[in-house]
Image (cartoon, rainbow, N blue to C red):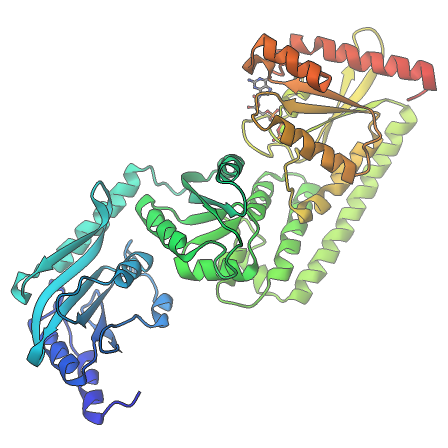
Amino acid sequence: MGLKASEWNSLERLLRRKIPSNLIITTDLAKEMAQISSSMKKQIGILVNRKGEVTHVIVGTHDMVELPNLVWTLKHGSGRLRGIRFIHTQRPREPIPQRDITYLVLLALDLILVFEVREGGQVGGLQYAHIVPQREDGTVRQEKVSDLGGLRSDFQAMINALEEELGRHWKGLGVKDQDRAILISAGAKKSEVLWESLEELEALARSDDIQVVDRMTQVLREPDPKFFIGKGKLNQIVLNAMQNGANLLIFDSELTPAQVRNLADHTELRIIDRTQLILDIFARRAKTREGKIQVELAQLRYLLPRLGGHRAFSRLTGGIGGRGPGETKLEIDKRRIKERISRLVNELRLIASQRELRRARRRVRNTPVVALVGYTNAGKSTILNALTKSNVPQADRYFETLDTTARRLRFPREGECIITDTVGFIQDLPRDLFKAFTSTLEELYDADLIIHVLDVSSPRLEAHMGAVEEVLRELNISQIPRLKVLNKVDKISKEQRDILCDRYDALGVCGLMPESLIPLVGKIQDFFLKGMVMKGKI
Ligand SMILES: Nc1nc2c(ncn2[C@@H]2O[C@H](COP(=O)(O)OP(=O)(O)OP(=O)(O)O)[C@@H](O)[C@H]2O)c(=O)[nH]1
Ligand SMILES: [Mg+2]
C-alpha cells in the first residue's frame, strides 16, 4: 500500500513487542504507536492475545482503523471471550466508534482500547470498553481515563473475573449441556403472525430438548439474500446470545445454504432452520429400522443440494448434537451420498413389501381398519391407549410417535376392528420428510374409516385442521370416510364444547378419561354395522 521502508520497519517492530500479562498495554508501546500514527498521518491498530503478544498490526486511514476480515477466522480461546484485544489510535475528542462496539460484541473480544494521538505524537486520553453480563445499565461498559497512568494494571485479573462472571451468569440462567437457542421468525407477514408461528417453533424446540432463551421477530419486505434478516437485527441477536449463553439460532423459515453459511460465519453460533429442527426430532425418536431409514433418507435429501464444500459445512450438516448423518459421512462426495440414498430406498422397499404382505393378510381376514390421524400432540396415542388398554408412549411434546402401531379394538356388542396410530402431521411439513414417510402413511390407504383427532384447546385449531386435511388430500385419501373428534374437551367449557362440536360436526372426547370415549366406540361400531349391511363389507 505504498509504505516507505522505514515505515515498514517501525510497523514490524510493533509485532515484536510483548505486553506483561497484567497490563492492557505498556506505556512504551502506546507511545511508539502514537509516534508511528503521527508520522504516517494514519491511525494504527494492533491485536494482542492473552500472552501479551502482538499478533497483528493494522494500518488504517487518517481517521479510522477497521478490523480486517481475517479476524473472523481467528479461533476462540478456551474461555468465554475470544482472548484477543483490539487497541488502536484515534483522533482527539472522539468517542469509541460504534463500529468497535459491534466488533467487541460480535467477536467477543476481551477488550477494546482506543487512545488519542495529540499534535507531535503524544498519547492523550484513553477509552476502553468490554462486555459485561446483562445488567440494568447496559451490556458494554465504557470507561475513560485521562492518561496512561490511569489504566488498570490488573488486566489479567479483570478478564478472569469477567469470564467467571459470564460463566456464573449463564449458570444462574440454568446453562447446562443442553442446547440453548434464540428463535427467530422473520418475513413479509404481520408481526402478530410472526409471533404466533414462534409458538409452534418453541414447542418443536422443547420437543428436541432445547432450551429457548429468547424469541425475536422482524417484519421484512424481502429477506436479505446474505443473512436472511437485517444486519442490525443480527448484531442485536448476537449480543443477546452472548448474554444468555445461547449457542444456537433457530430460524422459523427455510434458509438457503449460503445464508446458513454466512450466518454461521458471522455469528459463530450454530444455525438451524425449522426443517432441520423437525428432522432432528425425528432422528431422536426413530426406533424401528424403517423409521431410522426414513429419517436418514430425509436428512440426506435435505443435505444433498446443500453440499458446497465450504468450511461452514460441518456446522451446517452436523445437525444438533451430532445426530445428523455424521461428520465422516458428510465428507464423502455427492456421488457417495446418492449411492447411500438409493441403497436406503431399496431397503425401504423391501420393508414396505413385507408390510404389504401383512396388510394383505389383514385384508383377507376382513378385519375393518380405523386409522387415527391428526396434528402432532393432538392426543392420538392417548386415545389409542384408552380404547385398547395399550401403552403406546404418549407425551406432551411434538412427534412423540413415529412408527405406526396397530391394535385390536373389540366392540362391546360384537366384532372387532384394527385401530392404527400414526405419525402426527404438522403445517409446512418438510417435503423430504413427507416423502420419506409416505410408505408408513401407506397404511392409511387400507383404512375403512379415518378418525381425525384435534386438540380442541389449541388456539390454532382451524389451522391444524386445514393442515391435516391438506396432507390427506396429498396422499389421495380424502375419499375415505372421516370422523372428526375434538379431544381435550376437559380444557374448555361445556358451552364452548357444544358450539365447536356443532360447528365442525365432531364428537367431543377426553383421551384421559376412557369413559368419555364410549360414544366414540359406539359410533365406530355403528359405522361398520351399517356399512356391512349396505355393502357386505365396507
Ligand atoms: N388435558 C388433556 N390432555 C390430553 C388429552 N389427551 C391427550 N392429552 C395430552 O396431550 C399430550 C399429547 O398426547 P399424545 O397422545 O402423545 O399425542 P399424539 O397425537 O399421539 O402426538 P404425536 O405422537 O406427537 O403426534 C400428552 O401429554 C397427553 O397426556 C385430553 O383429553 N386432555
Ligand atoms: Mg402419538
